[in-house]
Image: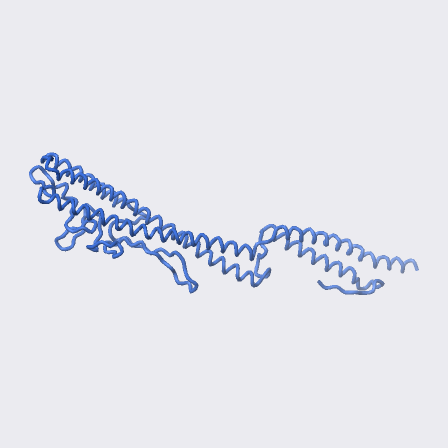
Length: 318
């Protein structure tokens, strides 16, 4: 703030008034600044407030935006995986029930009519498996048709390279650990390899065969085939559990990544706050101080402006 020292007996240039005016302008600017900081809660409202701090806080905000987007992607991936696990758990329960019916039918105490009834009851559950497959949808995409695969961006490194996690439900996904490398739970549209039908990675397991059982042709419920049917169902249940386990591993990683991202976002928020947020108590104290200086500057300016008038009266008196 510029000040000058001049003689008090000069009337052409009122140095005292100029000094008081400069002090008043400085107080006004400081009051406006403090009021802005109090109203916004921010110490840095533009680049001029703190050049280095402005650059750092904006870089942190950009990084925080990336982390927030990644957190949303983690949420989507978790939702997809949970939907898939719930559906597979439902399919697993249905297969167990089908196996129970088949095991009951394998008893020598069951007659033809009883075996046919058990086969038809099993087929109703087969139809429900297909309903589960058809209704397992997320974002307009079928998840259990053997072709769904999606990569979710869950972060980025210092070089801005994207870090992704894949939810891969392709039927030939090696991570399923299914021997046939062809996991398909469509019951009404079983996949085929050559002349072999595939269900849940089990060759020659065609669940529609349950509907073909009749009193004249027991089919897969004949004495020489029903044990093979039971064995195939056991393999299918095991494969469904393997795929659910794969998804469980994905969810565990997503949960860990979610915790990491939430912690990072909180820390970035704290860092941004320390850099650009105003100390309200300090700003309020400075505002009161500047308001006091404003009042004293007004008084000083008024007094300085009376000096030329006093000299003028002196001249008029002579």
